[in-house]
Image 1 (cartoon, rainbow, N blue to C red):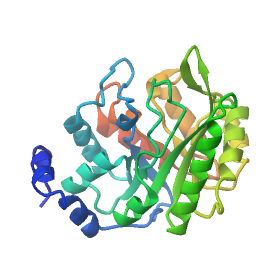
Image 2: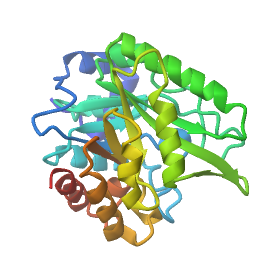
Image 3: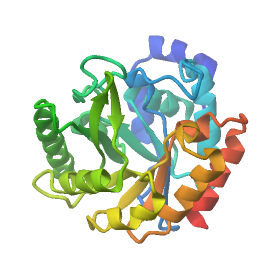
Length: 297
């Protein structure tokens, strides 16, 4: 029987083994299904303290509300799975919401948003052995590289070793690379075609094998440049949806950017979070269905 959201706390307190039990009996599926495309809903933002959506600073702070939105999104046709940290994925496991879904564990969440150490993206989330033990299907890591910060070398090395450890277990790793720098004390990702191209080249070469490596890429400032960016690597790619409210031109312009990029040969899918879970009009179903239609259109 599916656990009710209001019962999760009681179950966690009285039966911690319920998480492992739910993971052991979960029905799995191939990473890529019959459609040949991949639609993933992302919800790993809270673990970095990134709770804001648009002008709502704590939009993602209400866990029960977030879980309701995730369960609704996962129930929609064409949604393949979810990306999140252990706490959220285990809540979804207890709710029975991950049956037949792709489950992607978020691995490095140490770069807390707004902190002095934000660029130090340490691996504080899922380890490769955790993803394997829980029978999850893939992992994701954030790779922000600041040419002016010597600490980025440690991030590169730890990312490479995580890719190696995942590949040893034949588990895909989705790498989300950026060239980043601080502007007036705030970390900014460079979305110019040149910067994203360099980030792709660097990320593609990490680890002892790229056999299980995927790329998770933002759409460049000029979406017409994405074809050039995607020519940098033969690794399969998913698009990073991002926050539509941060996109110039608003919702329709963002959808059009996605539509163009999703036509490129190396692009296999879309990973979107806040833009689908917290749309401006509040209609999660419509936002998710629109994204699915863009992916399969």
